[in-house]
Image (cartoon, rainbow, N blue to C red; front, top):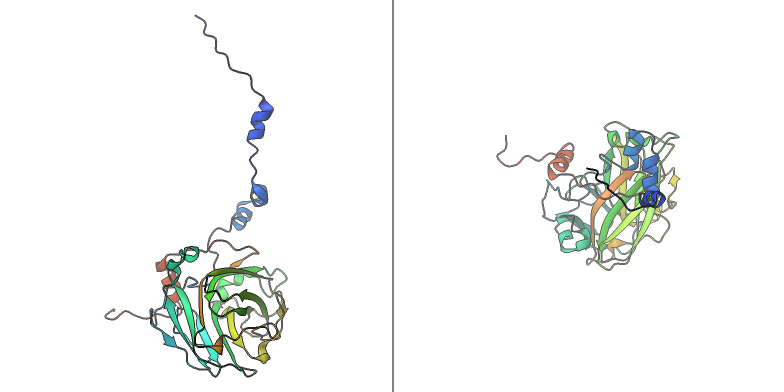
Length: 300
């Protein structure tokens, strides 16, 4: 017995064209990558965020309690771990770990934010007066950037801010020798709505950038500054210690009603911002405890 099977005719060229699914420019780069290392770099796999406690959910010192920053101490801790605040004005500020983000869909992936509140005003800043908060990033964690060499790589900073005080704010990267800094500005309209910002900085090919336990990069957010520190150049490295660019920097200290919230801070290699690196609270606490450890009552 012979069984005959027939199939309808089809156009092979058309069938092959159906497999030609667009992959986009980034997908094309991945397909063309020559080795695993290059592919790994393109997809930004592995640990990316050089900032510790960028989601502001570890506060060993004061939990959710408010803390008044001591005046002009060069940087005091009291809010979320790893974030120091320098208040060198004639006013005063307090800081706390705030549970605001889950109330807003755009930042609901975060459970906490750092809140800075103006509790005493200074409406006319002297030349050296300023208010900024910062994180010192250990040299071990920035060695891969190659800063201080001709192979210096760019970095991208991303973060979420909510404030009721409109104006231009400055964010700078600085070396431990305070003789190299690069500043970028962002504008907030004071709407008290969460807004995301992405700032890219070129790599710095000169200067000293420790790659050991000393500070490698100091990441600084400036909320107010006098004229002594206003000689920064947008997106360019200068060989002096600056906090802001020109005189359009806002003065957060003009009203005790002013509030500044921030969360989701990420600093990563490259010129593109990737989604925030969600580490477990166990990991994040361990990272924080490398620099500060507060034993629990009754612990051994």
